[in-house]
Image (cartoon, rainbow, N blue to C red; front, side, top):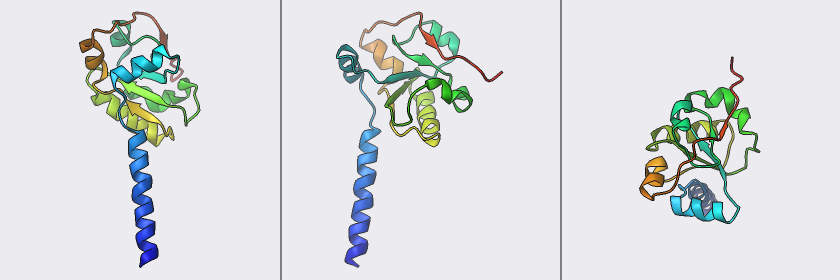
Length: 136
């Protein structure tokens, strides 16, 4: 009985750590890390026209619907931290689940997504890295 209790406690502890690492990154935390030169891979999962209208500087664009077929365009190890955003967070949540299903272990959401970025009065870029679409 004691052994089972310890095993259950261990599993709960592992789950708590996993959930903590998946905690959303705040806009403030992202800006601090960008300024310190330690920015995670930023993934914008909106459509290409939305991305061109304005995105967070340095973000890679792969629409959520194409993530499964274009995940190789991320070009990073599966244990690299990836912070995902869209407009409100809905598509980013779907993208986070897709990334986890593809084996990316450190996919996190940007808390509040682009709405929070804009509310903080932070600038948007109009050029940048649209990941190549090799699905055709």
